[in-house]
Length: 267
Length: 293
Image (tube, rainbow over all chains, first blue to last red; front, side, top):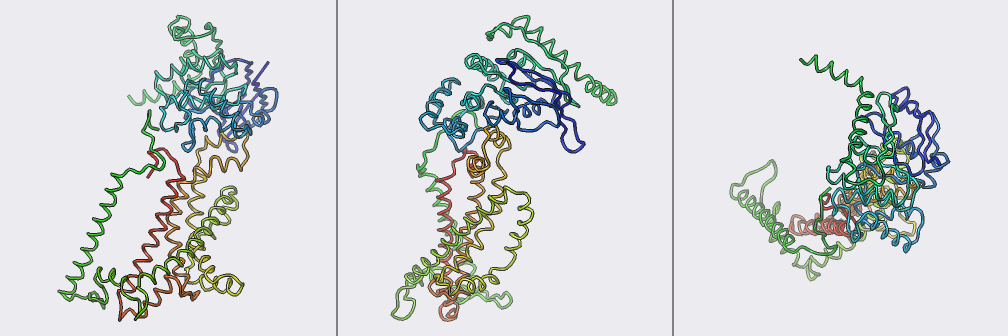
């Protein structure tokens, strides 16, 4: 079944303004892990927000979980994670995770039970009564993931969720995310600007280019599942990283040429 | 954000050592000001210098110990001590100010919530809200007294309304700013939960506005006391600090220290209101340590 289906999606900001996205066609199936990768300004975060009905496309059709993006949002069909954890200082970790459950009208007991499960899932047992500022950046992001998954959405949207973390934490959380993905069987759309992260995590990597933002390539990642720390040392991993890098460079040709000219003039 | 654990402060726990430091510092500053006052007075009297009409003597600048001492003198022959009279007056004014403060803060907050939800209303009304504060309170006060007079309402209520008039403005302006300070991604997050405006208001925007709200309430708390004191004059209310100030003003030549002592009590009342807000803030607002002023 197709979870996300985009057809001829365009997005222009302002009247006759910047074209952020042009002619986006993309289908994402159940249990897929799809990464959107591209240089900044290629509209990958915009595309993610269009799927989440947080902004509207200028034209084109967006179908999420078999319904309009708006309907899917209203049915709480997806959870979202941003680059910053966006936790509320005035709530404890447990209450941050329970926020969407409050919106859904779950009673206290059911909420508490689910929060406990989610804390176990992201390996933060015993931190429920802490406040966000008492946790490290990586732990905060885990809380944010737990919150996004607390109400069991079939789709998880992630906007550079590990972009602000150090390399070590990032790799650990990559593994953790794969474990969660495997355990819950959700579909994940993941925005990143790290090539190795995209290759390591995904079943498919969507390569995008800027001005106007469009899809230039889709790379199937045929690394065996489940993936582990050793996956990063396989020759196939390096091949795929090189392939994605190559395709990204191709998509960014215009920019590189411009940079070259500037560099020469500088001489 | 801080990395890894910071010691969690207990909610009601008092750190005694910093508190002692603070009190010590306050006493040191008080002593310094007292020394400055007395030194200025002494130099002024010794050199008999003049600033225009202003000369320094016991009438224009009484000794501080005389001012404090005056509190424990009878307010009139065979009457109660001045401090007893002023205590009653302060309680009366406090009642007016407190009612005005709650009234003004509620109206100010409600107004901010409404304006935060409509750009159109905000553009239309904000200039008039600002204009309302450029009219001197002394010009408004008599009208409030006339409007509310003779309707079976207690006299002091018009004083509260005058105090509320001074209170609501900082609350509206700051709360509006606070409501709009909510993290845009937090708003996106709530939108992803299909939360309605009401939910977004109470779960994100109001909590985000609290530090701004309390900053405003600190300003308003003291303003409400000033408003109540000033409001007592056109309302011809004798029982409060405003009445006492007016009264002792007439006897300034014979007993200057009485008026100074009244001002001292008025200042203490303002400080009490301020501290009440600080305490409420400590109980209500829970922020990361680095955000605490």
